[in-house]
Length: 205
Image 1 (cartoon, rainbow, N blue to C red):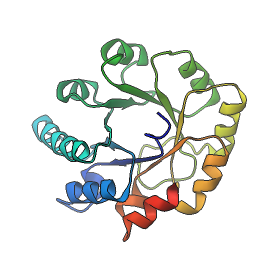
Image 2 (cartoon, rainbow, N blue to C red; image 1 turned 180 degrees about the horizontal axis):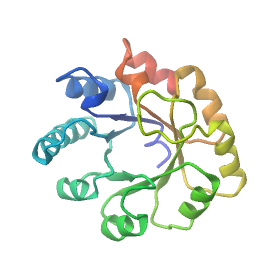
Image 3 (cartoon, rainbow, N blue to C red; image 1 turned 135 degrees about the vertical axis):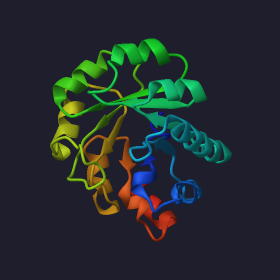
C-alpha cells in the first residue's frame, strides 16, 4: 500500500489548460507517479465527468497505476475505480465503507489529530490524507494549514494507517514530509505545472 501512495498525483480540468488533462496525466504516468486521483471541480454535467473519468482510468490501466475518484462514491462504483477518497464533509465514512469495502481502496482526509484517531478505528480504511501541510493554491476550499507537526503527532499517537501528506508540497520539502511520518505525498500543481515531470517526480521519491 505504501508504495502505491509514494507519489500520489491529483488533478482535474481545473488544474490544467483546456483539453490538456489527458496528455498531462499520461506524461505524469510515464514519469513515474504511483497513483492518480481524479478530482474534477470544473465540469458540471455528470455524463461529461463520467466520460472524462473513464478516459483517465484507461490511461492509468495502460501504465498499471491505481485510479482513484475524489468524493464521488457513485461514480467510483459505477466505473469500477481502484479506490475512492473522501473528505470529512462528504458522505459519512461509515456509509462509504458500507458501499465500497471489499470493492476498492478507501482513503479519508483528516485535518486534526482527533480525526486521525477516529479514522484509525475504521478497520476498512486503507490510508488517510493529512493536510494541508503547507499553504496551497490548488484548493480554494483548503482547510487551515497543519504544518509538519500534525504528521509527527499522528505517528506519536500510535496511528499506523499509511499517511499521504497533501498541501503545498514541493520537491524541496519532500524530505521533511517523509521524515515527519508520511509514506507518500499527494501533489497537484508541482506536477501539472512542471516543465520536466520526470525530474519532478523523481525529486519526490
